[in-house]
Amino acid sequence: MKAEDFDKSFDDGEDVTADLDLSKARRLNQTPKRINVDFPTWMVESLDREAKRLGVTRQSIIKVWIAEMLERKVS
Image (cartoon, rainbow, N blue to C red; front, top):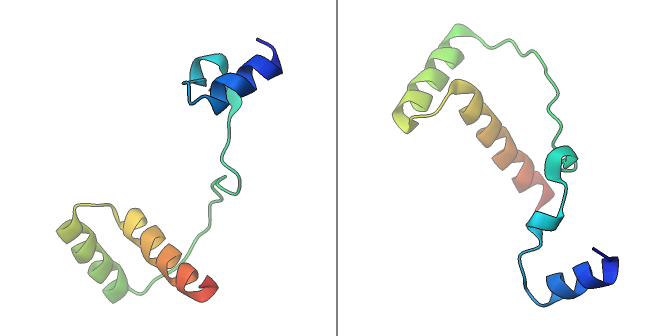
């Protein structure tokens, strides 16, 4: 498909995903980077209780809370 045809299809609101090779698609700034953080036992226990209450993993709740705090700093 020519770029002009692709652009027209996209501009017309047509679904162009079938014409894309998404096998190597990546979200910018979303590459995970592993870090180690040591927490006191009482904090881990509190995190686990809250994660269980919400039905998510400890890692998920840590990520969400840190993201929320960083968003507040940016805003």
